[in-house]
Length: 436
Ligand code: ADP
Ligand code: MG
Image (cartoon, rainbow, N blue to C red; front, side, top):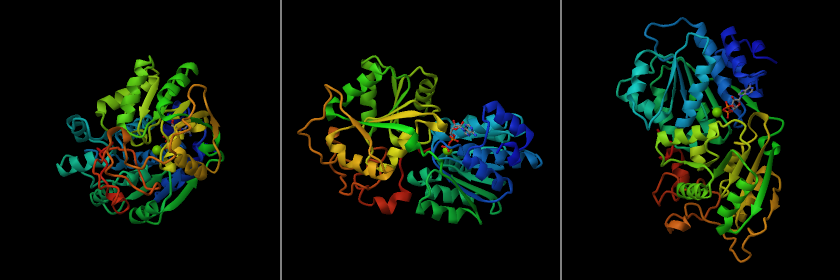
């Protein structure tokens, strides 16, 4: 199987080989042909399997075969949930279209709209956007989606998780009825199927499950540790192991900041990335991390979603997530595109229940280790921290008895009633983190 045999044009093949890709990934091999046949496609494959090229390459192929229109109206719209993802997807679009007569740009919130508007005014064929800024500019009359021929909903599961359902519905009304629709998702839930049903016409469904799932190729380990000794342990592991590029997950933004400060005091370059940071600060933190200037990036789940950090050697769960699926997403940040990686979790007594449900989900027992001097506290309670509860700040208002309920992370929404109506409102939830 080669990119050529999939029927992609010569300028695209040139860009692909410049990028260093030799063979299509399984999801690319499955998704590209039906997209080229102008069918609606529903594709699902795990994070890190190359879904972006799976829709971008055939989309560019189709657009480049059609006549260039006067004033270059937006002919393809790619909707993504977060600013970082939008930027990454656009980088890909630019790389793949290098040898084509195709113009593209990206828009998202948190930054000045003027340069975005100016670029759109000059004419772009492909627009990558987050929902908020897109709707904002459209309602100001600064862009039109009336000539869109291809619509892509990327990371559809994330979109739903982040409460973008309404925005998606709104965007669909702004486009012509006759268009090609592509929907890409890491997971394939009931909600996704429902959304697919409302967006796609007679879709071709493609799915790829890698032979070695991320969970199998990643070396996983649990360190049992007293809650108060986690910071000391993580600093020891990073320094003594001489780890150069470490992504650390914390439950809360506050926790991310605190840990980041401690790392810096210990002489480890670190930056935090979460929803309370300005777009500039987030971009800078990510760039510093990618270039190797920043050794440790401390992130919350929502902020880290979809970040493409190639060949990340170490992922640390400073706190393990109470939603088991998040564990899989987190450790999916290591061992991407076939590279091996290591995922470590620091687990205190109160996280025992979460650890068990993670092990149940991934259907394996994770190896446990204890480091001398950082032993777990034998008297600590194994009572789990309830979602929404934050012991440090004494916010006890929004506890939730159901430990399987969704997000706990203290991200974004400060409404203490939120948990009660959570399931009902899940799709409508407004989570300020990363919203644009
Ligand atoms: P997903 O959207 O499925 O999470 P991405 O599209 O972000 O995954 O791709 C993950 C990584 O794999 C990126 O670094 C990308 O450059 C790389 N990649 C994609 N396709 C290929 C390929 N055919 N060969 C090698 N690497 C690839
Ligand atoms: Mg993706």
